[in-house]
Image (cartoon, rainbow, N blue to C red; front, side, top):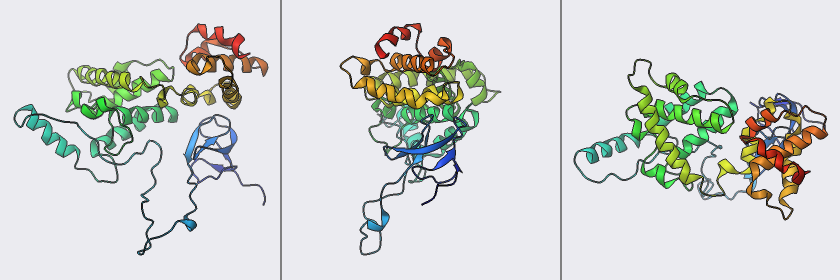
Length: 315
């Protein structure tokens, strides 16, 4: 077989395809990792890749694939959100029960109308594709769907939109955009996101936004207690660093390979992914003759200058 032609991210890719990555703007190759196609250079997750050979799937008497539903892409979890339990039948209890029925009036194959509005607002206001993606991941944590696997129990009881009702859509979007920007190491002021996401004529708009922000911080405090949290995994940290936009775009793969070598040792690397990845970036950049800019590395990996203490260990 001959070489595959180069494609763009908008087309369906196969492992080994050459394409122009819209994240790092490099001509790269699509590699398969855990059923997800990624850019070989910047590790940007392009799309899911279905490994099932449908010709071998046994069909039932009516020609249907038993037990198989429609495919769901990462960050596109279908179903309705849950508002939790509301005691009482009068006053606030009755009001929230009514809102729960409204909230659950959406179609079975997708999120509620309110959540769809929040998703659209995030995509519109996000500064980059990676910023949008990180914000939507936070939205799924703070505003879980009914069919979501292992949803945060605190978020189910009281999702981020509820304290800011009736401005939960704009407040939720502002919170997720702000926290995602902070996680990515960029300067972010919550007041700026409030002005972008909430109505201009709304008085005390900040108070609605800060109610949702307070609730989201409580939800994340519970979510991040687990060491297996996706937000704190080494691969997620490296993706959030978004080195494809920097002078270190071509060494991202080397950094990941260096991390895999580190965790095989008997040292305590696995419990300190952020400073270790930052130190690997510093060391590999030095080896490749690239300019070493500590301020840039600290900003991208969200660490302090102390990451340099790991240079001798990862060297």
